[in-house]
Image (tube, rainbow, N blue to C red; front, side, top):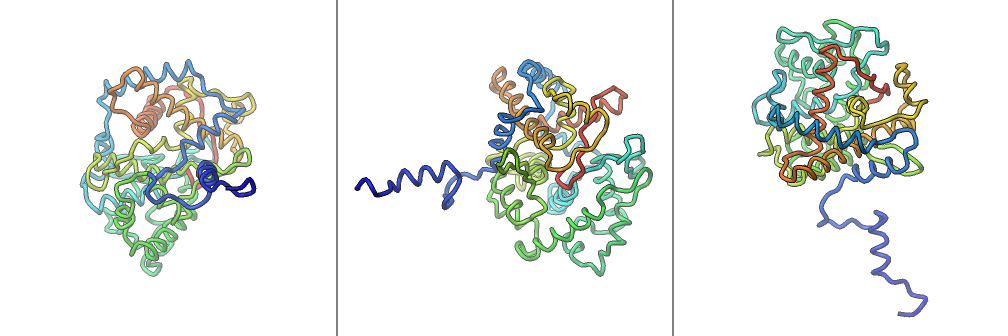
Length: 365
């Protein structure tokens, strides 16, 4: 080879390291969410991860998880979650995770969107699950993509009835939620023969591949942003779909994913709140003031990206610390996320004072 000729092997290695060039079909799937979270953390100036707080939280979280015998079984234990392990449950979970975003009221003093179902009143994420169960109890096939696709039968008025409040404010972003159902139905029709099952099967038991499949085919799962001139990925709802399947089916059948530990925590507004309350995350004075005064942060703002990215990386550090102390611990980012979410909800129901969650209105979380 002359001095003027390019070294093709070296060029191939360089392209691979930069994520450009042809993909290796045999390479394990990677969502790149964790890599991007570390990049955000390395360049963050308004959100800081406390090493001391993270180590302390890891010990506390693991002790409580053991005490409560926390496991994937916790998913089906909730009275509103379906118990059967079948295709109907798969479609129920897909519907939940299409619409699992932004439940907080504009005015923090207002009563939130509330749904009465099976003798109880439900808010937040559970208001969505309750609305779906209420619709099914009323013989409306709300979890069937064929129904969403038929705009003669499934009119906007029918969907407004499905998501009607029993009390409190109307459901936030209802128009956007209806659009998510319509757009998802069209992709399922065009690409997967209107079958969520076909979509899951195509991933061949890879959680990361299923996340990437959703993101590539459904724009409404493409949860990305630009930070410090680089594209960063969060994929909250795509990842939680994989996690919910894994937990509901207890890692078997439709919930069997060989690479489940590649799924990160789900970057929303609740987990950063809990991590801050645990002393794991610290905010710059301007950001701290914005959060405590219930002021909204625009989608794509640097503050929002730092909150989400640093939360993902913080939970990863907590997971590593737990395994460092307890090498045989059966724990992953999914279970830590579920535990933190349940804990912050328990604290609120018990009337404990907590630092508010940040307020960004979007379809991503």
